[in-house]
Every structure is written in structure tokens, then in C-alpha cells.
Amino acid sequence: MAVIHRTTLKPTKTELLAAWLPGRPWYRGGPAPVPEKSGGFRLDDPEGEVGIEFIVATDTASPGRTAYLAPLTYRGAPLEGAEHALVGTTEHGVLGTRWVYDGCHDPVLVTELLALIEGRVPAMAQSVSDTPDREVTRSYTGAPLHLDGFAPEPSDDADGTRLPTPNGTVLRVHRVLEPVTGQRPPAPRDALGHVATGWPGPDEGRLWAVLMTLRTA
Image (cartoon, rainbow, N blue to C red; front, side, top):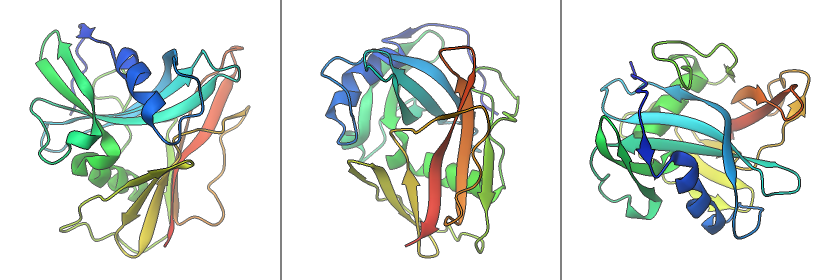
């Protein structure tokens, strides 16, 4: 179970994202984004060592308020071989120095995300300890995914992150979200699996988007 600490982060998550986003191939904004945390959810690391968070970050400097998905992991020591995926480091008021990674390159996040898609683990609330997030929906219609020995090998392009996954499948992480208002989006018809969620919109309404889809390669 992840414990949510009410403490400080220096720099904050949004400050880290503001510096990191412009270097991504899927980024659509200008040189100085102003991201705000609009929503998201967490997953629990069974070993209790790695923080796993999926942040919906809205760039308020963008004329259309572009929403990005930032899957992040938080570690108490560097992840070997993942220097290229480091978003930055931050000082946590309770836990000390935390190494923050693009979670698509972190095997702990990818393993738990696939478990979420299969329905084997629940999505957890972003800001409350030990509380499931009932707004997160998922589906999966394929055979059980065999994760033994699986190591993520993601690649970024202008549309997001492509991640070859077990059983001849591909996970597409939609980094630039396409929110709809008013209702939860259905499962994509051509996908084996998906994850979707909602967050507050600027006009007190609710925005919803599919965050990732799993398809046959």
C-alpha cells in the first residue's frame, strides 16, 4: 500500500514536468509550458519500494489547455540503466532525495500497469492512502499476459509512447490526451484492452479520456 505523505517537494512535480516536457517528441506546446496537475491515479508497488503515479498535467500556457499524461515513478536510489529516462530529482520532506523517472521505462510501473489492464490490481486514489479510485475504468479481452522475464523497451514518437508487451501485443500510451466532456469514454472497439479516467474541467464539468490502449502487434 502506498502511503501519501502531506509534505513538501522541492522542486515540485509540476516544476519538474515544466522542464522535461519541451524535450519530448510528442510535446505540442511552446518553449515554456505551465503545467498544472489536473488529475490522475496511482498504483501500488507490491514490494513497497517504488512510487507509481499517472499524472494528467494540463499545460495552461497552451491556448487549448493541452492535457498530457505523465506516468512517473519515484525511487529512493537511481534506477540502473535508466539515466535517459530520468525526469529529475526532488527533495521529499519525509523520504529525502527521490529520483523521478518516466515510468514507461520503469519495469515496476509497466508490470503493474499491465496487471491493472488485466484486472488483477486496482487503481488507487492519487492523493488519499489506501483508497481505490472508482473513476478509473479498464478492460481486457485477451489471453493472460505472461510477464516472466518481461523488460519494457518503449519508444517515443509524435503520437506518444509505443511499448511492445507480452503475447504479441503493443501498449500505446497516449501522451497527448483527447478529452471528451459529459460521459466516460467506451472501450475502443479495436483494442484488446484500455485504461480511461476523468478529471475536473475548467468550467466545473468533467473531462474524460482514454489514457492507454493495448492492441495486437
